[in-house]
Image 1 (cartoon, rainbow, N blue to C red):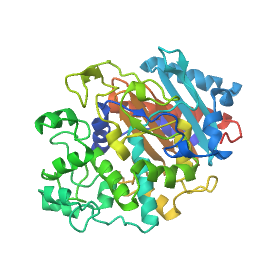
Image 2 (spheres, rainbow, N blue to C red):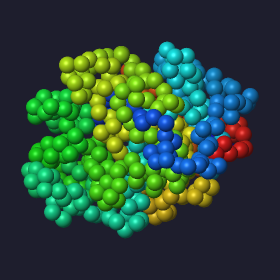
Image 3 (spheres, rainbow, N blue to C red):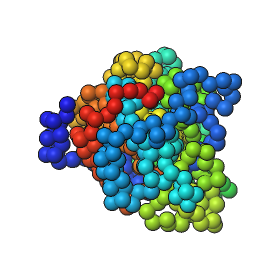
Image 4 (tube, helix red, strand yellow):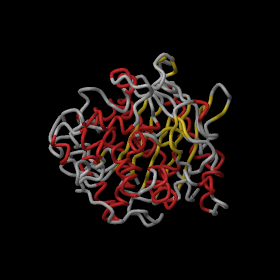
Length: 440
C-alpha cells in the first residue's frame, strides 16, 4: 500500500519554515499542566448515565491492542523511547475513522509503578489549538460570528471598556478572528510570550497575584503591534487565548463548557480535560511528567517558592485554547475523525469548515488550528511543552497517527521532527499489518 510513499520518505529532506520553528520555540520552554479530577469531559460529572458510546475511553486498555504481528513495531517504539530517555508514550492509529490500534508504553508514573495505558491522559500542549479552531468554526456555522468579525474596539467582540481604553496601537481595532486563527494578529515576542512570563509581569506591574487573562489582555493592548494585522505572521499563544475569550463572549458559556458541549461530546472524543497546574490536582488517569533537566524555577504565582518547572512554572490553565487541554492519544484520533470530512464518524463540522481549516495556500502555513497542511494533503498538528510532546498526523489515505509523551526532550521543538520520522517509519512498515476492527 505504501511502497512508493516509503521510498519517497527515505529521500525526504525535512524542511521547516521560520514560522514553524518559532511556533515550537514559544512552547518549548514552558512548564506544564494538570487537570480537573474525575471527569470524562467537563460536563460529564453531572451525567446521570453514560451511553454505550461514551464508555469506550473507560474500557480501552493495552490488552485491546495485543497483536503478535505488531510486536516488532512495539520493539521499535521501545528502542526509540530508550534512545531519547522517554519515560512514557502513547500511540494511537485509526484508518477511515476506525480505531485500529491504541497502546501505552513505559511509565505513566515511574515512582508509583504505574504503567502507561491506552487511555492514559496527558498534556497535549499546542495541539489544543486544533480544538479551539474547531470551536470557532462551529460558531461560524451557527452564524454567531464570521471569520472577518472584529475582535477589539467598540464594534469588536471583546469590546469591554477596560479593553477598549487599553488600546495603544490603533491597528488593534483591525484584528479579525481569522487573523488570530492564522497567527496574523500582529502580536510578537519582543517583550516575551505573555502567556509564559507571568512572573516577570507580576513583578513589573506590582501585582499581588499572577495576572489574569484579562490583565494580560490589557497589558498587551498597551503595546505597539509588531506588524499590521493580516500582513505578517508570528506564532502566538496569546492570540489563541484571545480566541478562547471570543468563544466565551459569543456563546455566553465558559470556554471549557462550550467546547465540551459542542465539539468533544458530539464527536465522542471523551477523556479531554482542562489543565490545572500542580501534581496533586491531576486526574486519576493522568500521567506524571518529566522534564529533561528537572530544573527548579519560580512558582508562577509565588515567586519566592521554587518548584519543578512541570508543576507551577507557568499558569497552564490560563492558556485555555492555546495549550490547556489534556487527552489520550486515542481521544485525539477520535477528534480528528470528527473533523476530517470522512463519513466513518459523523463530523461535527461541515465539509466547508473542514476545507477552510485544512486549505493549502502556496506552501504557506496558514491553516486554521492545524500546524500544517502540505501539498500532498497531509495534515499535522504538534504540541510541545517542557515535559510533554504531542503529534497528530492525518494522511490523505484516511490514516491518522497520534503520539503523546509525558517526557521532555533536550532538543525541544526540534524533537517533533524525530516524532514525525518515527510515524513515517511505523506507517511504512506496519500499516498493512494492522488488524481490521474498530476499538471505538
